[in-house]
Image 1 (spheres, protein in one colour):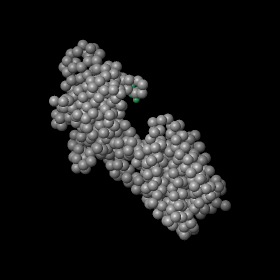
Image 2 (cartoon, chains in turn red, purple):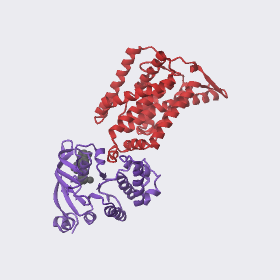
Image 3 (cartoon, chains in turn brown, green):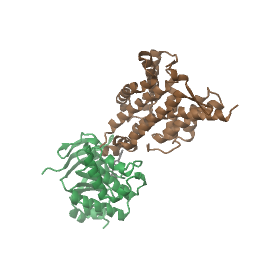
Image 4 (cartoon, rainbow over the protein chains, first blue to last red):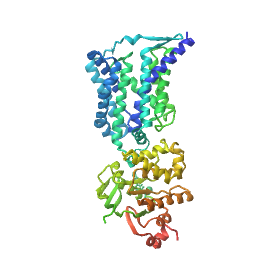
Length: 292
Length: 238
Ligand SMILES: Nc1ncnc2c1ncn2[C@@H]1O[C@H](COP(=O)(O)OP(=O)(O)O)[C@@H](O)[C@H]1O
Ligand SMILES: [Mg+2]
């Protein structure tokens, strides 16, 4: 029996989860918008950061929220190296070569995780894991709500940088017209290097939020890659506002599917939506062009 | 005095296709020079090569004594060689003000940046009125003004313009050239102009080259070229 309360419950949980998805998607939309290379290893880099949070907890007893801070720099460095070593060399190659490259990275990361951590599901036990708030009969998971807030904060900081600083304006100019940006004196390659590194570093934030209530397995990345790709397609490739709204919508759609169908179907909805989007709106639902 | 810009035996093209087959071009400080020629002659390719967007496969380019043919495009801008490209290429989703600020990417000093901004907005009062609007909402003529203003934000010594009158109403073309005149006289800007509108161009510049199939087929002062029979029949329709 689906009651109104259950629906509200699903909408709220979905929205909160959607905020975290939005950050995953935002990071991918940012790197695609500026590099024009679609990173199929996006979710796997997130998976790495999630394992990072597990390790930090086991070794140092650090809460996953601390992992956001501690992992940001190594993830930035990882992204920087990946751009220089793997993305940059295929940037002017065909789309298929680029896809092969980032898919290759995806497989390597998954295999590495499997070798190091095994196939078991790992999580971080925190006191707050099961904590809930009850508001007017609606149950809100505390770590989910905090994850939403943290994601919103990081997304907000990102759009402030993009909209309000000279560096951000150069990033948006590069996304819109790289050759013209060069003619304005922008070092486009350097801009792309830092944007890609930043898009990977942002995943540290996501990983910290997720690990307060979720778990990680070596294949966890695929789900997030597909989700981010879907959102980025929905929002129009490279469009940040669209990516953010898309992330929220996916979260809600997943939660509603869990209620109306059953909870195992929730994630599958992402794949179905992905297929439908490719069929009917390959150009995206919203505008394009990184208006941020 | 050595020229401000000097290109020697310049060859360039796209992939295996060579478009420029040996261009020699020398411009002294304070001069205005035009490159004329039919569609597809390689005029834009020449400017793109000077700016470093297309790599010279042979030859050399000296700008104010610096060899720029090996520099990446953004470093060439720093020598004061700045281009307003064909079709304007404003950043459509940035505001007018943001377009201008990106134009000053290499100007580190905030005070200099503000000064340049003030100069450009005095030159084009329209840009001040529309500062907060997305650049894509401007008319074609306004976008051309913005493109010129953005180039000026980079503090050019030699401004290259690729068909600034393309697609604009005659009245707007007049306005564009009025501004270019003012820049020449008041700011001692050196100008390299690419045009299809031969009348306009010859009125504006001191001398010109006619580019055909990747070579300069004809060179001379504006007066000489205006009287040249080939030019009169092929371009001026006389
Ligand atoms: N990006 C490009 N790739 C390949 N060929 C090009 C490109 N741009 C221009 N060309 C070719 O180079 C030649 C010169 O073009 P261009 O420099 O644009 O001429 P113009 O500006 O004088 O009209 C033309 O034959 C054109 O087809
Ligand atoms: Mg041209």
